Length: 114
Image 1 (cartoon, rainbow, N blue to C red):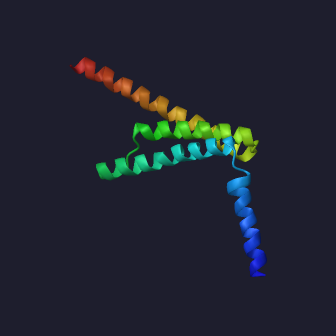
Image 2 (image 1 turned 30 degrees about the horizontal axis):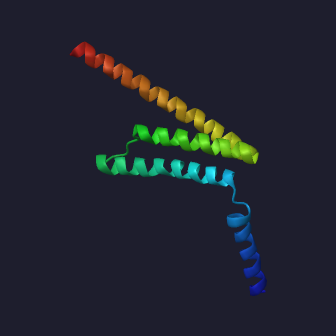
Image 3 (image 1 turned 60 degrees about the horizontal axis):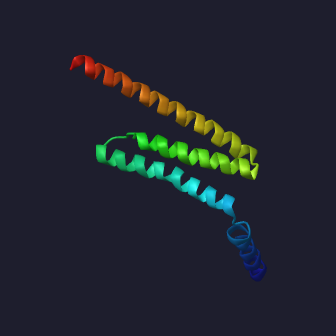
């Protein structure tokens, strides 16, 4: 029984990590790395500030990772992943637009005050 379980696990791992590894998986891994970087960036910025902050680079990593993961999900034809990443990218782009709008407003106020 344990031998059968070990063989099944070995076959599964070979299938996932070797047999199915292709260019699409490489894109997916790069996308996931970008997406993960946003958490590291946010954590480090918050630790530095001593409070919870979301730096602009968080949104850039979100967009980069989200677009690549969306592309990967289209390639793999995964409806759940397509819908999830597609909506996420929309939210990230909207947040970037809001941040840029706020920055333009602050720059305009600074020019009027100066």
